[in-house]
Image 1 (cartoon, rainbow, N blue to C red):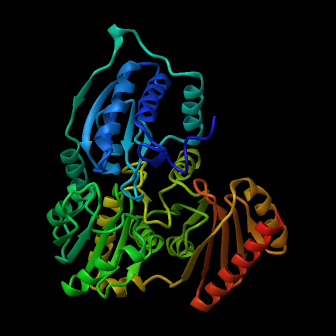
Image 2 (image 1 turned 30 degrees about the vertical axis):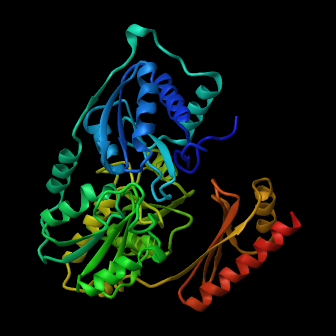
Amino acid sequence: MSKLFGTFGVRGIVNKELTTKTALELGQALATDLGNRGRVAVGRDNRTSGVMLEEALIAGLNSGGCDALRLGLAPTPVLSFATRYFSCDAGVMITASHNPAEYNGIKFWDSDGAGFQRWREEKIERILSRGPKMVGWSKIGHSESAEALPHYFDAIKKRVPKFKRGLKVVVDCANAVGNLVTPKLLRELGCKVVSLNSQLDGTFPGRKLETVPENLEGLAKTVVSCKADLGVAHDGDADRTIIVDERGDIISGDRVFAHVALHYLSGKTRPKILTTVATSSVLEDVATKLGGEVVRTKVGEPELVGELRKNGGDIAGEENGGVIFPDWLLCRDGIMTAVQFIAALDNTELKTSEFNLTLPVYFQIKRRLECPNHKKAKVLDRLAKRFSGHRISRKDGLRIEFEEGWLLLRPSGTEPIFRCFAEAKTEKQAKKIADLGMKELKAAIRQS
């Protein structure tokens, strides 16, 4: 059986790679994993395929003896929160996150509201390969609806004091479920909110969902034209946040994470920051300021959560703007990330662009190169030999440390490509490192 789960969850083009049959069988497999009993919270984003897959998945859960708690439309962090709040045995989020409208996905969550770790995803795959266990007609589960959003709202408002500065914020949730929470929450916390792409539309006509600079030009222009203090952008399920400053410049996800970490961990003794091999060195600068340390893991939310559970940590995050606050949720929460960034800015009298410069500046270049999946292992071995004279890490792909910066050459877990990330303190140095990485990567692929 081919590997079903990717970096996090199951994902694919609807009615081609991800069908109602897949959703039904995944529901049955989860029920089998839970011992054919228990209650599962189910949420979805607003893709046009969401209701169809939700019905199939719940049918699978019920036929396997589990009850389903229908949350309806909800951002991913709300599903994580609700799984624990309603004392469910597991949760399922139907979303393809930042992928286009034709995609959807299914992610599993444990009773703590954390995404399934690798071993449990592998267990689900084994159940699918041998066939899930169904219950008799008298033990079939049922479903009921529940409101999770008000409880999530109240819990955040209890944790976060109202902002003082009355900052003007443009919020772009990309016609997706973040609109159910972020604009209202920021307004109630004291911001002046301008909503962009605020109507829910499962075809996402306003902009592409991935929060990369080329998709945020509309937000940047709106921030400038409205004379706003900053802009907030979410992806399709609001587990990521990117910030735009008052000049319309994008603040990258790892810098958002770094600012949030510095604010959130202020006053904590020797804090531990967890991040991946793909994240900026600015996190080490933050750790130095706090007298703490950085621990790097493989890429992916399950890897970060696994490290949190195994060895502890005070905050965790990725370069895509997804931050985990372990004392809040064991899940990337783009909504809380936006709140904490604004709280940090609110504690100063600085403009957003000035606030961003309170941390050292790094330049990043991100590229990719096609590589057949069967070649990836040999390519990595060749690259490791080529860079053996440098300090390298093979934790996830190959990360090479230079005096002027670092290079990451990493095979994608979901596509037949290699990713090339380079970072340095000047744009010229970053380009030089990226060019070297691409040159050696091309040679290794050709020789393999």
